[in-house]
Length: 383
Image (cartoon, rainbow, N blue to C red):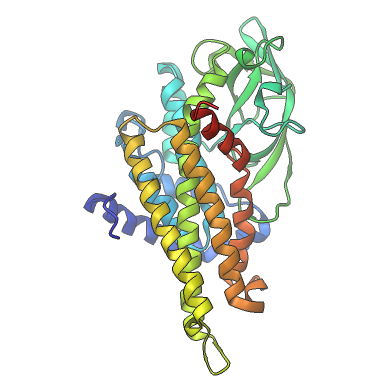
């Protein structure tokens, strides 16, 4: 079924971004995978080409267009390239962190931060998860105690994407440790602040080119002017408000990754022969691939509708949770069954399906686990 989400402007943007990915990411992906991080220059190159901050107002150096379809195009093309892990930092920067700066910065903060975010000179991240608490953010122990015109921050975060590269880290803290949800605030910590330390770049199962780090804070003095939203205790509400876009972004990437895995597998089973005929000619192969193609088509149309809802300001937490849950689980099923059709070659890292398999496993965890998504959906049913 033909997709109708994109118009000519989006397809022209796709062509330009595909060329960028093929030139600036794909040739270096193997090296960055081994190094566990992409160079900062990737962000400035993307910014100069207009691929960062598409919805940042033009007065701050952005594209001035609020249309999540452009973000979706970038996710789809990164997944198509087979080098998606090297571009995940760009996606986090655009889709997940930027909305906080746009929604909650005052004029002074916008002047201070948005131009660098748009140009790629200022890389962003968001630090929520702490060791030992997983999805239970209300139990976080990182504190920010006000002392005059500063907060003093102490604590630790883990599994933080862009953790090594980020210059601005939106950090979930307790400004009132006596409270749970109501005591949370979002504070922007900046590279170079004394006591703000990066731990090791974590050794992960997949997505190796994406830097993921532990962070620690020891008596870090952060100006009160770095508080997002201008009022303490708003952090949990701010997080909940922005989570639907984050979860939709993950869902879109998951469907695109599934489509890419299917495309690779179709090519493989048409060329690989067994028992004197192409592997794809066996009934089992046809049935498996027919099932996967059908499920991917259905998921694409659901996420397309979610993008339309987001653009209209109507995307609900429940609908975004459905997209994240279903599409990441679909991604896992697709890459697993596609790897099986590759036989022993599918287990070799030189084949794209092997890396797709390793990269896929985390998507059912980050951004809210499948179990959390089901909880949100269940509560939406009044249960």
